[in-house]
Length: 166
Image (cartoon, rainbow, N blue to C red; front, side, top):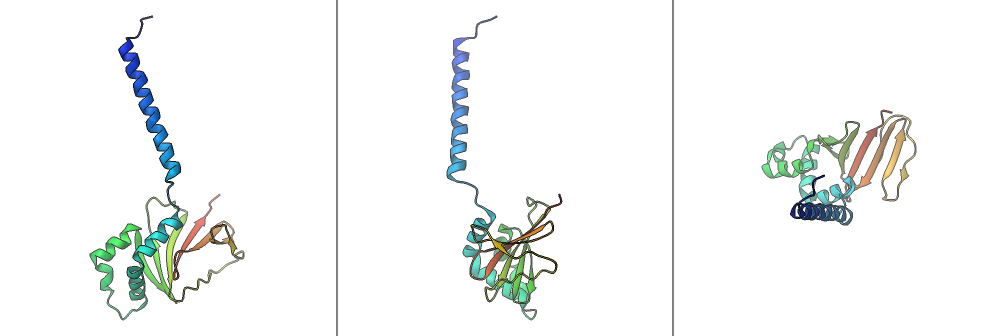
């Protein structure tokens, strides 16, 4: 067996230490700066852009208003940040539908704007009573479908619907 050159051995050992240090910093970074949850991320998004989102929602609610705000480059950029595909009027507000290619196919996410800030669950079917979790998120269950609603601000709510295919 041929003996390894001491310089090559030292170089391999040095590279091993560098890889180990990079790995340690990646783990420390992941622990110190965890990826924000959907609720945390969208709470920040709504707080930062609340005035524009309210204006977009109120324009969507009034069919007599010219929908020109939706074609503004600045508004499109704000809506594009969170992949908002459409804004649909509802009885007391508007729904911002999020369409992200990275989102699981069995999940739909919407930001709901309600002018009075009073969320009322109104889906048809046999749903269990709402049960809050430790973060204040309310969950309704019907068969293999779960709807989770979190408050993002006074008038904005996050509605996540997941259908478990198993």
